[in-house]
Length: 380
Image (cartoon, rainbow, N blue to C red):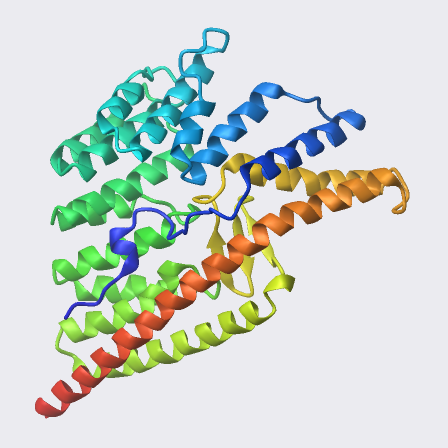
């Protein structure tokens, strides 16, 4: 029996479908935000941006037919880059309805000169991978990274590196995988997942000391995303793989203790779920709730979190201009509250998912602990 590590098979965040989120209600909030912004001369309303949001929200909500209807890939009255962006959204929506052949055509419409070219090529590579053409996907991603003419921003480059690393891992190219994972810098939101990748690759080539070092490094982090939690069970399994059963047993006991505390913490948060405190917000879409780091970007687009951030800034600005009892202040305060009413249930959903994963890790750890103790006794 092998340890089942969630992150090995999931290239992006573990997220549930945001079916409870009303796209229309979110768009309505955006309209209210734009009105408030225009009233204090920050910005005016932009109908094209609002239409764009409809498509993004439907896609995040996996409402594929609605997203297809909301996108106009052949609109001649838009800029070239807006068309490129729409081609990607349309391709994603086509994938959602299992029309991969047509999706590929729309991704290929995005030219090399576009700022969206790298995203389109990444989506093509993943299509190849899902269809079983892993070598084709590897070639395309390597070519993308080596092409100096391609516009690669910091985030998309690291995302491509993460995907490439895991594709190498799935293709049993462990040395190549480890090299790629190590290219993801410490400041990246993908860094912790890359560390898990390094450990998994190192274990496969029997470089156990390297695996142990990176996992112990990850465990120093007191803000827990899924990768940090996984490091506990993976470290114990690393010892077990080396037939160091006494060390493995101690590590499994530590993992069980860690996961039990984590589950207790999450249970306490869920008990008071209506009053979740967002201790910190990273990159606008990663929320820290009592040491639990939760990324909501798979459930809602960047635009939503940009708007939430703007609504908070707007409230601060208005607080310095008018009395708190004024209608404008109440509208701004209500807007921030309405955004939080959408975010909080999504955080609760993710906490439930995290709790279930941790409970599964407890069960796996208990099984492996018993096995390690038995084998440790046999070797005495």
